[in-house]
Length: 208
Image 1 (cartoon, one colour):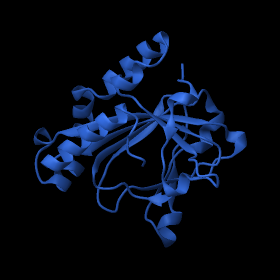
Image 2 (cartoon, one colour):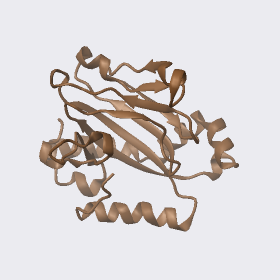
Image 3 (cartoon, helix red, strand yellow):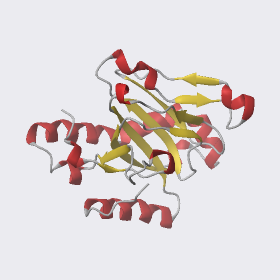
Image 4 (spheres, rainbow, N blue to C red):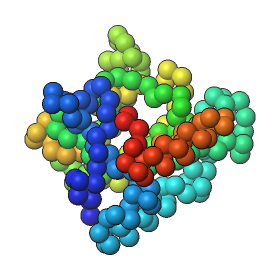
């Protein structure tokens, strides 16, 4: 029930770019205004997934899960925090990789649900590092890219270093759902999230 490739567009970041100028990471926003274009059976499935991913109940569960980190970062209780969820379906093409990095602080919580068909892509999971450089970068924990699995973390300054090793033609396409909770604690941030969503519905979404 994966959408056709034509429904995806390039997610452009430096490590994902190929020699021909295209990206090895594709994405499709899982917003209702994007999903109505899908064939009826796919639309029904992905609409239900979208509602769950964007629900306040799910956000509250993640806030409770990461209460300590979030309250440390933002200096107030989780009941006073409200984030903007952006769910996307991701297709990583052969050759995709991303170097060791920590997520930007415009994000509050990062979640990835793995969607392999079976265990043949087990080795393609995200790699977490104890640091960005030197010995710390070499100390790793690799996630298994398996059905009904994934990971989540609260975004903290210069923490949660992670990467993805370069995939090969033999690995095939790597599907997952990325759910990112964005900070919206200023009028500018609140407006940006909604403005970007409006533009994406018109085909002018952010490039990265």
